[in-house]
Image 1 (cartoon, helix red, strand yellow):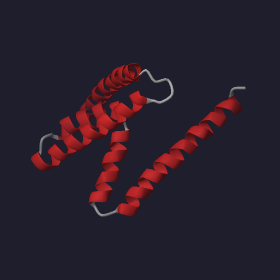
Image 2: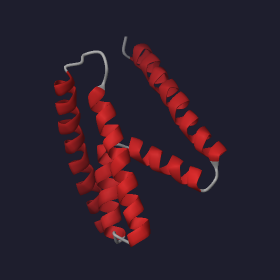
Image 3: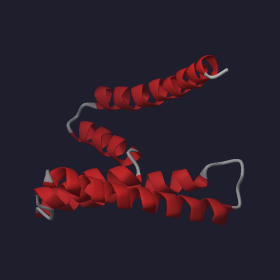
Image 4: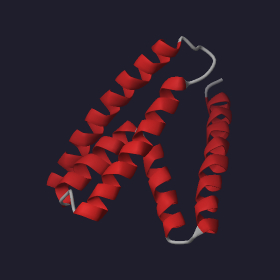
Length: 127
């Protein structure tokens, strides 16, 4: 039960940080045509998960509870794009270049397809 609490607390904090940072960057950019806030959060999340997973692997920095709070909860609530980047990078490190490419391509192509399908479903169900 404690694991779920740690993940939930980290996730809530990560979501709040995503909202604040994304909004600040979007306002600062003065752009209405490009989602700079989302881009900034995704890139920051990738940098943080790379840094923290590297420290965890090389220095044994985090115990299991801290990993759940930080990696799964905090960074997961901040951006799941960081998990995609980290998992894809791990595939590259494992010399699984084709799987890394398929992982990215599948997420992007099917992700966009599911957004499209959801929009169609919304139009059909709520006319």
